[in-house]
Image (cartoon, rainbow, N blue to C red; front, side, top):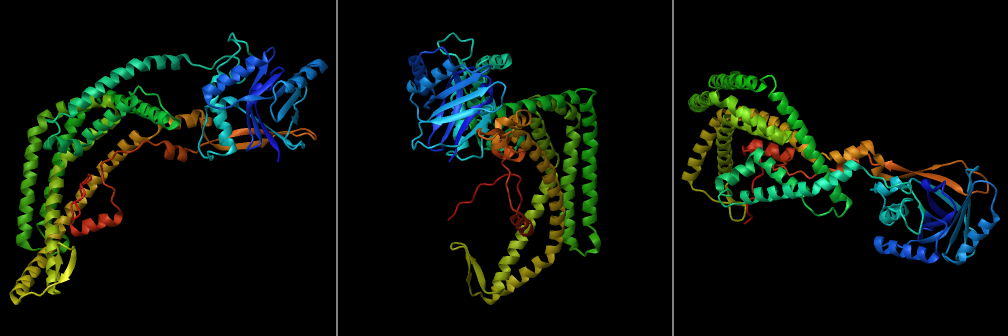
Length: 563
């Protein structure tokens, strides 16, 4: 079995020195992290490696020597490097050498357990990318995962650069100077007071919302049913998460916080753009002027629809008495709705003006208010649907009960099953009479129910599209997608090896490259949890509810208690 040596490309031009890294015996591989240059004191080297082990919890050692000859071979240096194996007794001992004029290196392994000669595979890797990346698909105990984990945990080693005044001089990916950003450092310094202020305001708002006066029956119902109140609750929860002073313990927590922060920023920027468009060119006045005619047009269309139903719709012969009662009942509600719209018309523009200000809280907040406005403007359609569904459901339940009566059965409420039952002649006569009446009245009721159910489903689809847009803005991992787009190596799905030019008698050379995580897997892994309160019914259960006349609510219902 060949021995693999993972060598950082940033150390290829380093001067002579010692190879600092980790030996993984179970995988028979060595991970070179840095090269320690002369002069040095062996005791200082051992002390430094012990300090790194305490800081990282990972054992590092001197793996061997590194020789880089830029001209003629220096026999004294070669002899000195060979004698270092008696000071740092590591098993196995690596001896790596290269010449500046050649791309092929000499790699020798000494002190093997079985004193046999082993083939060497030299794997070059980009130390910076490996340290900053997060490996997703590899197993925790695999060789690649152990290699990534080793490089990531030894950040204190990479903090030592050539400008530090210390007894040891190292070469690694950051030895020419620490990589940092002034903007990032200023952001870190400013985040502490900003998080403190946010935490104070969030705790104060949360304490106000938890008062007994606001948790009563009417207000609690609004908090659970209105989309705007639900969005406010989500926004408070997100602010509580990002204003927490606790440092992210792992990569998942950090990515969640970063995704929430960037999602809020994108949402607010889009909301400000919408607000600037609304207040530029008097668009709010134009919307207010167009809203009243649209509401009147909807009411007139509903009136014409009811007049069509009160006649002979599609040539169907309806029960004239029931048809007349239902038509007049719904007509009266439309007249009430038109009166309500006329009463509110002088205040529509002022209401829209204040609603437009809510866009500064984010586009999702403006869309939530839009969804609630649509629900309020179409409340009469919802009422028509509920009236028709209740009446239709009552008749369907009555017909099913009377049909069981014909067969000599009844529904056992306690045992939740159908049992046999004997009925008197009077009961059978009355049941037959009621069944006949309900059966002949069912087409009229079913037609009204069908028409208003279709109208209600259209409104549910419109509000569903708005809610899907809000959910998309709230759950998309913008930070993870930005990392995948700009720095794809930060989210690694795995690695691939590219074979470099080979030479007989030299070590096999491979270049390790990082495979980025696919966009679909990025969305699946880092998508923020959705907190929608809307029910998720299957098509089968939805069709069953529509057939038997159960009311389809746009929110989740409490589960009925099981007896």
